[in-house]
Length: 129
Image 1 (tube, one colour):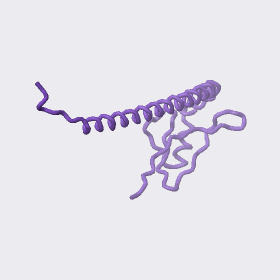
Image 2: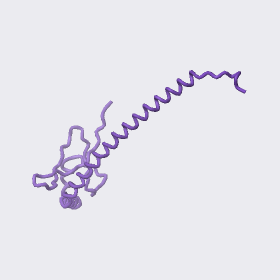
Image 3: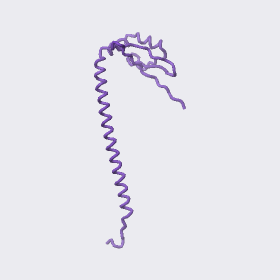
């Protein structure tokens, strides 16, 4: 049984100055290639560094990179909000799991009580009118 390696989506790196910059990822080690998130060629798979570097020079990709840099503060703010949302959802899920576990235990207890009661109840059919 072999593991299937899926293609990854390329994302630019943040430079020391806080700007998004293109940096070609490593190819090889069974990595079939990368898709670019810029949307210029949505389903295009880039299978080598040279193909990806050529794509980096296209107007559509450059415009996307510029847009990322213009909105990087918004991305940070959005990331912080999403991190907070995920954290609160994890707490909600943990509480719900506890509630479900408690109700499962109650159902098991009551089912056991009911089956015990049914097995001990004897009805004298001669006494029924």
